[in-house]
Length: 503
Image 1 (cartoon, rainbow, N blue to C red):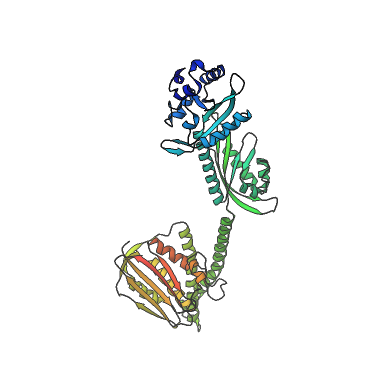
Image 2: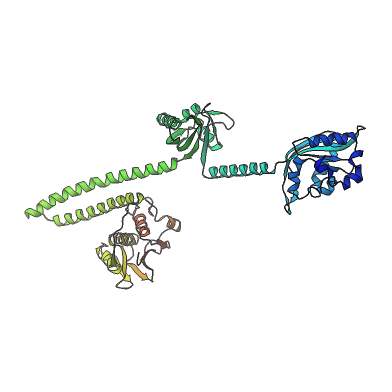
């Protein structure tokens, strides 16, 4: 009997030697030995344990084989017995077989208590007199399968969490039936009941009519034999339940079999409505601003040409010089506004180039102060060294300083002084511009350097497009410096920036 001839101390004491075993026990053992499934037989009042070769690998993992053969099950499965015993008693008492699939029965092995999973069936075995004499268990460890399934479920949950956090819709198209499986978000966007089956044609009906052809074309191209299977298209859908429109960006991939037929088509859907609206507002803003600025520039240019003709003839009416100066000043302002718009475009496209040279930063600040027209209302006070050499783009840093100084004058109409402080250490220089004006609401401070942001939101008091600080921040960032502001409402503001001395 192979392994059954070994280690029978308990079996001999409880049920005698094999030549005295009842026929029912011998028959059951014969079934056990000829089975390719892992099987265990518990026999007699002491539940003596027998098992076949297919069961040995499980015991080898615990170090119990061959000691477990012919011994009491309770002695062998000390840690597992509280779970096993009630099941065994029920089978022996009622005679009803039982089974379990992937049931957790902790097991002591590898020098620790491990979570071990089993799929098993327990059946009562009768003796020669027809009385309950033991139990036969067909048992298979499924720990590896359960762990793989749990890992798959964890990965699925993690993916679902990621998709949910990213607010993405998912879809999976059966290319044979055109049935679409989508997550909750996708169905919500398309106005589909959560339990309803969805087909491609139904989803295409939700796409607005003018966008439908390009969606169909992109789908056909992705599923076309010989294509790379990539799918990317932006379109608008209109929910049939609430008529809410949503602009979505779809990305996906088709999979093909060995003969080039599409077998699966899956992807994600992202709601980009807000991004497109922001882009649309930006485009509208630039369009309006450019149009509004171009008209006065054309008018001023024409006036300047006429005035220049008068200048050449020497026939100058009174106040012509005054008009020339006014026109020139307005033209300069308009050119600056256009420059701001162009700079924003360069920043967005990553084309804000720098032309670095070494120059005296203090001298640049003095020149900026001299060229800013304050109408005689403000005095610029510069604190710091007379000579401070930096390596930077002179024109761009001049642009930053002019912007900060103009803002200081603009937002302190009742004050008479603007302080500029210059400080340095071995690595960087810090320039700060302090005014003694109206100050800034603390809630607005975090947004000062945002594009198109204006402290005076309604634009009733102060002019400008809300681009100066945004451009200044981009220039300083390109230099590897930092920019910031501190302010107390009603008590002025301080704007500062840093530059590496050698960069």
